[in-house]
Length: 393
Image (cartoon, rainbow, N blue to C red; front, side):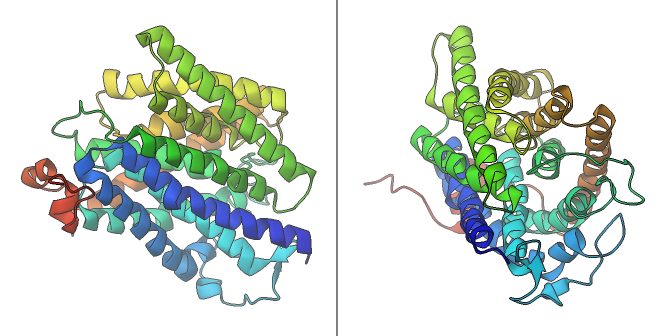
């Protein structure tokens, strides 16, 4: 065991949890209407709690167990065979478990952005549980656990796909799942309402930016120069995408908004995630600069052209960003085109089919959408009996 590596991954684990709670909760919560902000907080917090228990029970074993190329099996359920002395590389395996648990929390939490303001709470919990175990955990095994796409014996590609911190594992899967759920739900009754609290959005984005240093830097699993470079390129990409998003917005509308600026930040962070272990700061600046424009255009394509109410643009920002960064690894020569494109295709098709089937199964047991009256009243009051703001005072 290396003490420095262990200390850094402890910090990184806390940073990645900080991304969901409170970062993502504030980012998403500020984007919805005032009558729905607590429901977003509730969904993010409940997912964090539930995914933690499921990761301990089954998820970690499916993702990192010693099964076969398709899944890790059940040998490590409830951390069987793992104690404080068991190592994963130079860190305790229980710490690696905890670090990966924070990824298993934020990935289904990202999907929340697609269905806010109209989804039933029972659907959120049931869908997120099945999706994490049946989509996220297997894909994690395929890429990071020595499975189907990793380059291990029997896998599809000799060299394996390169995905440093989750361009495919986290962002592609969450983005595509978001589209599937948004289509199944249908649009909100009233879509043309601005964010109720841009200040929350900025604060949440700032927390996500800081937390992302643990997300990408921690994926090195060591306190070394590789982790330092991953943090540096992460920051440069985020800064570049923020500026190009704001500039493109000003060219189109004559003004740059705070919400637009910080959404560009998230686009840059998602795009650099798969590449952060290999690219240089200049390459990161190029990735972020393109992502700030590309992801903004995709927001218009999804909502305008295809008329899909992916409420908070999960696919356009996270999905497209993760896919773009994965492709840029091949563009810069750090990975093979076959491995990168082939893996994106395999995971994309699997995610679409599996997510669709999960939705169809879950709706047999609980409603996917709240009633029209509940939607108009707001989910804070109708689903949770609370209000974020006392409008009378």
